Length: 430
Image (cartoon, rainbow, N blue to C red):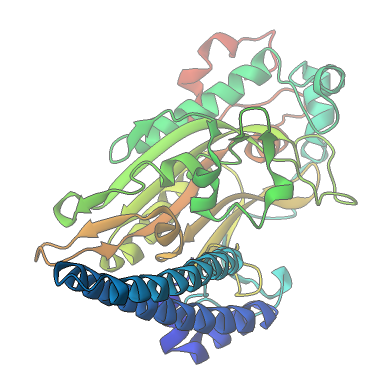
């Protein structure tokens, strides 16, 4: 969340940042008003508490001096003030909760070097790699759902029977390709990132910590009986690994990599292309995440982007990197680079990774702090993450891009050691 002291002391920059996002400023104005009310109520309540303590001391002194009637009068005055104090305290709590709720709903401020713009149409293309629109043959212009059905790699019909629309099932070599992609992404990152297998069901405060709640409640799967949430990404549990802890600067940055299933309701997908693997409710993804000091954040952002893009490049997939504008970055992000792959069968650029720096926004929500080397006090950490590899769209682009005129799929070099049993003349992979 935003630092309320920043809102108090530099309201102009906060307003300007939210305006760059295209945000309605009414909630900010309401927050400013409520924060002022909360501080005034707190001051009045604390003054009453001090007066009550003073009266209590006087009552004690009067009793010791055998002046019971005067003590009784002061006790009555203290009782009346006590009732007022309790009413003020209750009002303080209500206003404090309203302030916190508004803080939780306000998005992060875009970084100074985040491009200006109102929508995805204003995103800046940083670079395009391995893409020649005229180089794709007719055999590569076949949608992955047709390729998957023809080769026995996908079984969407039975997945829908089991779970409903926008669920898919991989079979045989198709399922092996999912496993291979995830293992490759893990193996590429464990040199510097600690492998973690976190729970896929988390408590409410864990989703609040990343900014997924309360704003995106309609996108999440909630198990009401146990008050647990299915994670939309491993970012959620990884961000909270050190929640309410104080790390030492000497131990930073901390890096994590995790392979999990991810669950998204895709509540706003009406009218969007949901065929095949383009938009699904459940998928596998390998996430890389880092916690660092503000001084370390820029280098970590570059590092995560290079790792995510390098893997896509090594799979032989045409891709591009976008610098997202202020009007298109995620709610919690300060700066985001998207990696999109080109899928020739559907003739679309598909987002496969968002590499984001969240400044201290998530860390304030999760109470992630570190003690500087100087040893004086604590500071708030910065969080960064990106998809090392998200399976569905990479899977789709891969089988379309590497499809042969004979209808089989050539597996790129980095994946071949993981798929050796499936690389045979009578199989779908070559």
